[in-house]
Length: 147
Image (cartoon, rainbow, N blue to C red; front, top):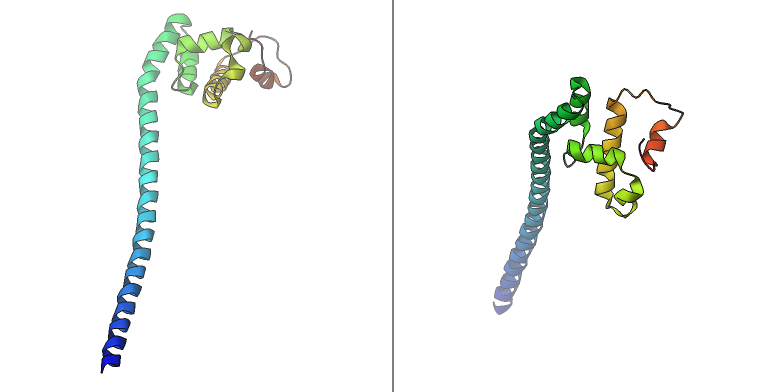
C-alpha cells in the first residue's frame, strides 16, 4: 500500500514536472515570437519617423535651394534625393570643400554615407556641362574637391 502511494506520488510529480516543462517551452516560443513582433514594430516606427522627418525637411531645403539656384526642376530633384540630415547649405558646403578639409577619412560610416549620398544626388540632378570621362561618378567619390 505504501509502495502504491509512493508510486502514485512519483507518477503525479513526473506528470506535473513534464507539464511545467512543456509550458516553459511554449512560453519561450511565445516570448520569441513576441520579441520578433516588437522588433518589427520598432523598425516600422523608425521608418515612419524618418519618412516624416524627410517630408518636413523637404520644403525648407527646397526654399534654400530656390533662393540660391532658382531652378525648380533641379531643386526638386536635389531635395528629394538628399539625406534627411543634410540641408541645402550643408550640401553646397560639401560640394565645395576638399575631402581632407572635411575630415572625410576620420568620419563615421554614417557621416561618410550621407556625404556620398549628397554627391550622388548632385550627380543625378545637375545638368553638368563640364568635361566628363569614363568613371566620372567614381572620380567624384574619390575627389579632392568636386570642382
